Image (cartoon, rainbow, N blue to C red; front, top):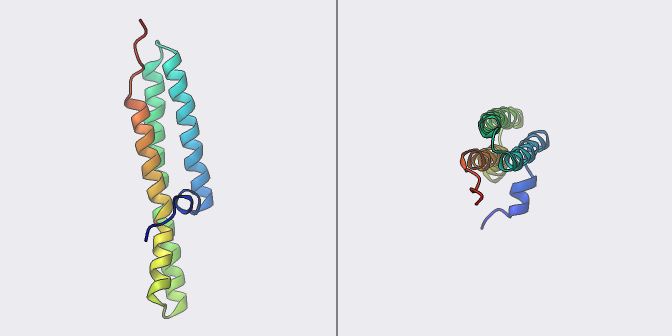
Length: 118
């Protein structure tokens, strides 16, 4: 049984998911500008690399907050069903995984070169 793609893309922690998708949209805008201009390639590559770093930091931060949140409620429950425990932990991992996927996409945008025009 697999997690549906819609659940993966939209069921993470909302504040981090919005930030990560914003980073992806900004990266696409920078990539389009990079393709259109020839003289500022390094400037846009630098901006894209910064977005990669920030995406990874946001993913790590969401992981730590998710773990903290999960363990806090586990300690308050004083006993928990294993299915509930693993369900909570799997939901906690959605946002960091999405952050790493978005960082990989942005990294690919920063390393690819525009096609040479004849």
